[in-house]
Image (tube, rainbow, N blue to C red; front, side, top):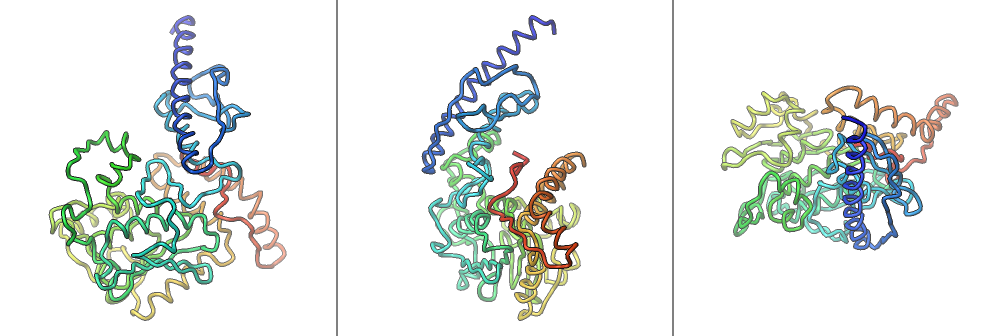
Length: 407
């Protein structure tokens, strides 16, 4: 490209960027006002200096500073997505996570004014730093409803700001873990709006639209996305039947323990539907694609030993020993550990295991080590040299400034 055409192209690209940024910022002001945190954010073309591809040409989200932005793959649409995500995630200091903030695209139809005291289908109990989330519809074998999905999704996002919680154990009340979706509801039993005709492009363009969330998106998937984003170790204590969503929700959890009476089944084929709750992503990463497909094709309900042999569960326990074993494991994960380092480790594994090259892991690993070496890492090394127990002060509700690095 000759110099004249190149300069013209850059000027055109800069105008497009400014227009898109102004549109996104206008929408972002509406978001912050709704949250009660209205900000005076302004931007003008003068903020953009030497607009070039793959160059950071705006800095920070403060009205007194330029806005930080990186044009990934030379794409204005990617540029817009990044501004929107930064507007949602960037906080005034320390990248504080708020209980009712969802990642862009993660969805969630729950009431953002909800607290754990409002839950009706689950219980939220914290003891010695361990949160027990109990599916609490024992008269219905803890069958899954849209309300239960909303409450679980809220709980897994809320917990990122609850520094009293260091690990999570999920179990069921009564003799079942979760008997799958409640199939006795009137109309569409999955709570979906059959008047809509969604397309794949809608899954990108309307992902956060309230009507689309309520009427099209899989509630199990919104739950497992919340589990995926969680900063605390998550242990499933499968105390009885876990079928359908009862099985797939556990695939997003770090460890699965089962009682001798547990029964686990990916039974979708028996009722003519497909796997949900992002299990097509999680399940093959646990048992491999061939075994995952076998489980889906046969739609059989496995006993605990079969699930253990398949690598789906870590250990099988007598019924009375299941929860004590889960709590003991949770304490091993968290006692004398940095909550920030634990949260980062969880996200590094999940985000990087699907990366296309180890360099991507190196980039995020380097930032994690850098920032931890200045905070809890200093205390950890000092305690090691002094032969004492470390006293970490980091909180998972205040993550390092590079987090979330994938946005």
